[in-house]
Length: 476
Ligand SMILES: [Zn+2]
Image (tube, rainbow, N blue to C red; front, side, top):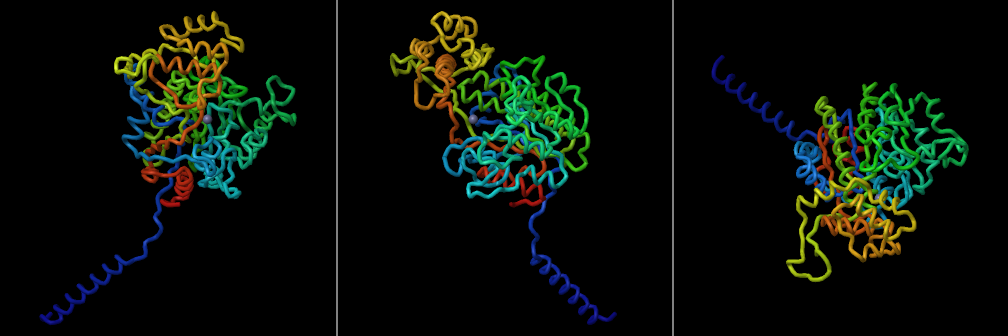
């Protein structure tokens, strides 16, 4: 070939190269797609704010020389977000509005389940997952008809419409439903039943092919593709009070739920796991009970982490909370009210964690021991038997005897409030309130799609993002 055609060929090749490069650069970008995780674990520490987690982390480290799976594995290997939790109509939320936002992606008013503030009825994450053929599980230490799990399957104006919520589960047929709340499932002639229409809902589940467990032993033996477990009439026990021979722990239930869901997981699953007792302990200003339940919550997260290590390219773990309960924190407090001077101030140390370890019953149980008419002798006996070395200030003793409230923000029960203040005086772990606060909660995520929950997000955006992720989209 002579020089000129060779030169023209080179020019032509260069031109084709540039045109195709520019064409590639200017191509329309399709909506970002990501593979949806096949296995999803959604952990909810109900009422478990960042202070709850941090106190438990310090307790684990200083008392048991153990880590915390959530901080040491999920956050360190995954992503971290902060989530705002307010309801549509109030600045501090209830569990119903918060769970509705997280389950459906819309803001809701307090008290409403699965209904947006504008009156629309949204599709929940679980309804979407069901349509996709995924298997669905719910594990909670609350009654299964309590607001947080219920917002994922129910659409009712009043979160206390328990029979309607239970009927909703029966229609929805989650493959796993474990928790408390047998009272709304038993036929009305059975002891403990609160079911008014006479139906036996446990039998109705059995008729649909469910295995049923009522004790820890039954749970361990459960076989089959669908399982109902109702271990108490109402809420399950605080971890600190639980009878380990009879009642399963949150991690016992989580282990069994994974086993049932894995029976036939070809199209994946989504498993909701909640520890309601973290919230309940907050309502009772009971830091010793809260720590035991947060530790148990973390053990359940550890089971999901082990699962994730088996399926690292297919699983997503999210650990979050619907709101903070109690305004909890270790603080520097006055030893007594005699002086504000530096010598009369005290900050928490590891010794205070040891004192918390020495408490072996919940404040709710302590109040039950005192009964409705506590006497000076019965209060002294309670202190000697269950709070050795703790000092009960005279004003709190009087509050117990007279059942007198001590503040506008701590009001659930005068006796547990006074006992909570006694524990605070002796350990520097104080509570601002017996109600929910507006503190943002954390969203820790690890696995497929975890990065979508990074940063600062609202709980409604959390729900939208989770639904989008199920559909393989990166943005709602
Ligand atoms: Zn609560």
